[in-house]
Amino acid sequence: MPDNIRHSVDTQASRNVGDSTIGEDLRITGNVSSKGEIHLDGEVHGDVSCVALVLGDTATLEGNVTAEDVVIRGHLIGSVKALRVTLQAMSHVEGDIYHQSLALEQGAYFEGRSRRCDDPMGLGGGASANGAAAKASEPAEPAEAASHRKDKPTHKFNRSLPESRSV
Image 1 (cartoon, rainbow, N blue to C red):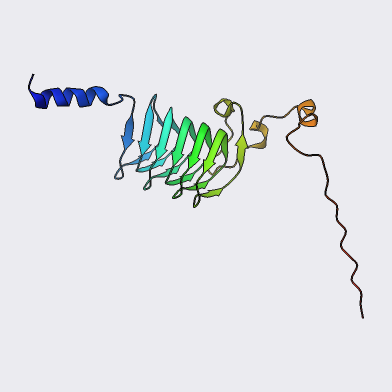
Image 2 (cartoon, rainbow, N blue to C red):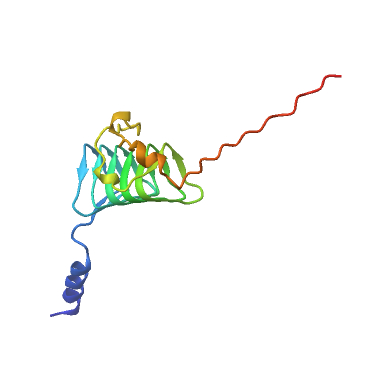
């Protein structure tokens, strides 16, 4: 087999078949789903569901994301439900993030709520495209679990200010 054909076959074999790229010049209106990884450099107006999402520097996503791994460098308006989320320095996120692990680099912009969950991808719907989650969709914490929490201190801080003296 000639070397140039062998190189071509080797390159194709090493490429992960489940990876998809949405280029800078592409604009999608509607939901996007993949059984693999999505590299988004263009613009999507709709929800994205995949195994892993990389939102590039030039990307804009207006919709909700459900994935195991999410790395954001671009602009996202919507909620994220993922096991692992990374907001890199150039990222701009407006919406709620439900996660097991969250990393924010210095310079990342994040406006919304961050909520750690054991199963963020298993949460029901109710998150709108602007990132506001419906209160009814949030998992309720049992009263007994809240009362036995050891990670939050129960100490209250009270301080009285000195009375001012008038001359």
